Image 1 (cartoon, rainbow, N blue to C red):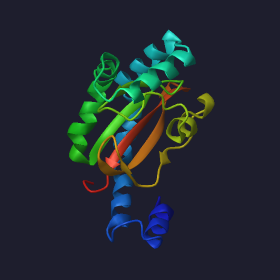
Image 2: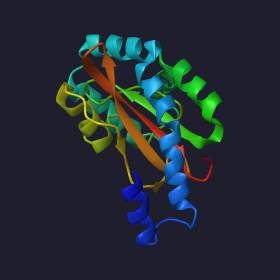
Image 3: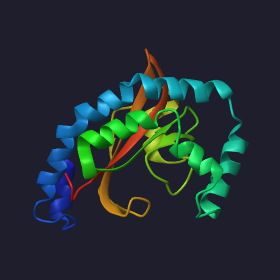
Image 4: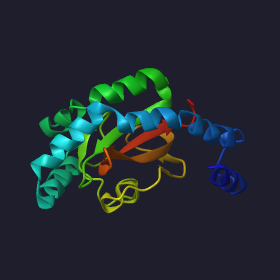
Length: 181
């Protein structure tokens, strides 16, 4: 992570304390790893994966999600999803430093989320592709800081694979507010 902070600072994309903020991300990684192992998260992903929803259905739900800015029943189901308790507990621990969090199944579809995201299907994004890694599980992915429209905060998103024993069953992304770390 240190190289990312130095590179961004050199390019002038971080405020003077930006490197220190990025180092704070490393200090919360144990909490994020525990969330990726939380039994509530694992059960929720396992249950959604068992439904075997066709990808075309997921992409249809994604198109509806993006096209409808209001809170639909489908969006509410995700926000009330079976692992939102685990996300809420992380939020209680991290406070405003947690801008958002969401868990994705083995196809990249949302299972639960702490707030509305810009889209439902994450399967075409690196946060899911590189951490799920076709069921092999990749390393934690720390993306470059950016302004996130859905959380209205400057964040760094950290994504991790979610495992059920040795099997990778999905991924988890937590957006950390750089101004609140």
